[in-house]
Amino acid sequence: MRWRHVLPVVGVMSFAAITAWNGASAQEAAPEQDAPAASDAPAKPKPKPKPKPAPKAPAPVAAAPAAVAPAKAIWPEGASALSESYGDWSINCSRENQVSICSVVQAQGSKRENRREFAIELKPPANDRTDGLILMPFGFQIEAGLSFKIDDAVLGKGAPYYTCSSEGCLVPVSLPTLATDTMKTAKNLLILAPKQDATEPTTITVPLNGFGAALARASALSH
Image 1 (cartoon, rainbow, N blue to C red):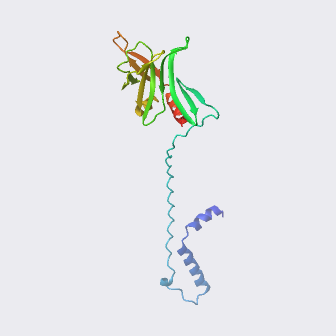
Image 2: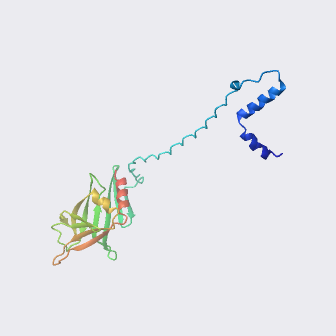
Image 3: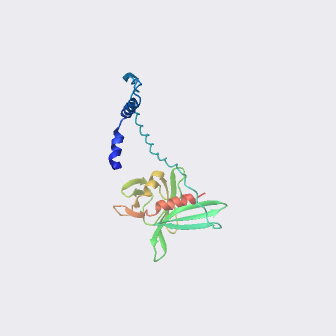
């Protein structure tokens, strides 16, 4: 007889059947003893309840990353000035008595003649605004101020110029944080200014490639 045929039979035998078989064997071995009454037979034990599966552990909840303030950049040891390029923009910094002053700059003009005809210079944001200067070439009527657009969105008008030099006229600007935040992802800043005897204003296009990185770097170095 092979075990694989026996094991299933044993497996289905109940505890009561085994007890009854043991009682019958005892009767045959000792006939002088009275057989136990049916009421004295041991009660059939209740089947043990199946253990409930352990509840699944809740999935760990990922903790939200804590807000980290932008770290200050380390100024190169021994340097009193620093200049870096980021796309179409550059940053210029100077340092004196442990105080750093930085600005974000873009200049346009004639490379052949090495002459600057237009420039925009902005300081790192302070008090929710970014102040700066725009150098406009001669020939524009800027007494009433310049108009600005970021891509297709109209930004508004800036202050009129306050002085002129041999290179052109300087126009102060003060941009809100909303404007500079938009410039970080926009393509172009457009500056519109009328010319004499022209029906439509002239548009100067200022590419914004690298502006966000340049402004962040200038802010980190200014301390």
